[in-house]
Length: 242
Image (cartoon, rainbow, N blue to C red):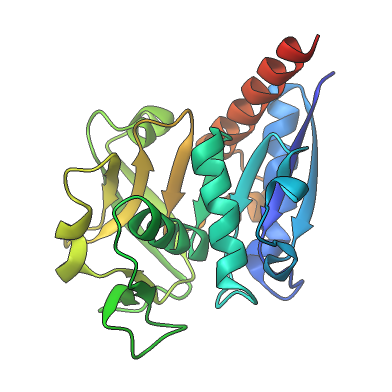
């Protein structure tokens, strides 16, 4: 049985509900895929200028909830490595917010793009406070037809749970238009709740927390897809090494 190795990027806190759920979610998905799953928590402050030193052994990277991170730069380095190396990447809640920042800064050249939670005085608050807090809220999301996320769920609408107060600033959404970063989910008011990179093997980000399905021992399609992508990467790398 193959083993997929996954890096959980964030500052582990046993009091955070999502951090309690993530290992259980990976375990459920791995069992369904008939693979073994191994994961390590990688603190953001541990990630130096050369993230390859840490992440070369991992098949996939998940940037997890709970911010501000101890080191925003560390989180952004991990995300950039996943984006540029083709490693499967999942960003949930804060992870999705920082994936948006990484892309804006390093691909779109919006070097001043920032997060209003960690830098309230930023001149370019790409990530801003939501008009209505989503802390411990469940809501419907409309998936964009033809998106990878819609294909994974095999649905046009989904209901998911959040623990979130920040997201993409609606007034600045135009800055990411006409790029490879595509919106794949919106709420009833049209605000962004999920996005993906179309030129990457697997790069999906959600403001909601699909991992919470594991708290009621429920298998989740996005967790299945992430573990499957990690397995594909593992088998591809193993085949090239043999």
